[in-house]
Length: 141
Image 1 (cartoon, rainbow, N blue to C red):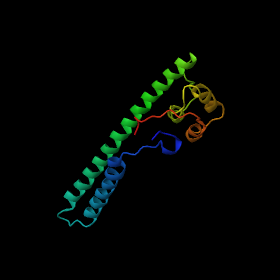
Image 2: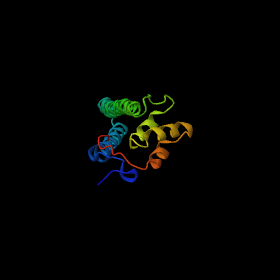
Image 3: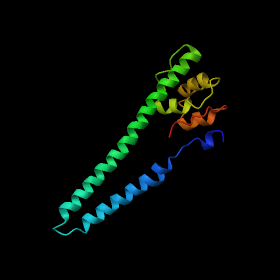
Image 4: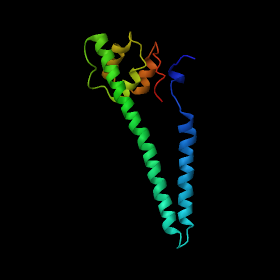
């Protein structure tokens, strides 16, 4: 199946449908455990809650850091592509979200759409909807 505006969003089932819900369940369980803890078990219940929060924080930070790295790579790739196509770097006024959306534009429409994104302050979604010839990106999750 070829990628297009309607099907370009990607989900990682193990992350989106298992890890996130299980993290929420564990957090709720740790809170319930602390609420129902007796005076003898309140310390261990508190530790369980703190460790749960720590693990969830590490889990989400790892995801956020990976996405930020992907964003930086996309910025470099699209800046290079724009330079190859036009002889000029991307306009610094483009927001990261706009650059991420522009990566789906074909080479033929990329420079004009990038300029239009600046001139008309197009949103990420507006940019994606304006693309006529979709350039698939199967590597980003």
